[in-house]
Length: 119
Image 1 (cartoon, helix red, strand yellow):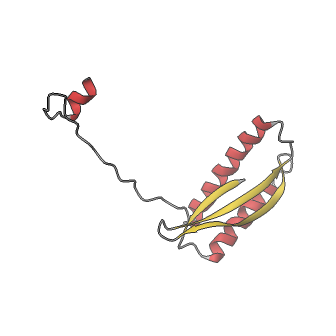
Image 2 (cartoon, rainbow, N blue to C red):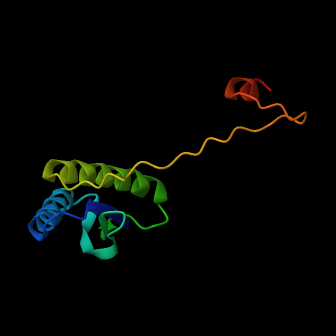
């Protein structure tokens, strides 16, 4: 199971094109994948600006042979990223806020960041 996030502005046609391209890619590798099991909406966060889809694909090997499955899952994820980039629907998360805190030494003197790193 892969969770794929798209920009909330992605159209229904773009999402369908994404699904078709992934399905064709999977179908072109019958020695690796049985096929696409399902592709459905999993979550929506309007504040963060994304819609998340769950992509489930069945591998030809049983789950006990996890090593090759994880390698191929990584290849599938890379392909999904390429396809979403080509369609212009890749979700880019907003930058995280970073707080810098300056601590005081025990004697009450403020320190600078360089002296804190040296200690």
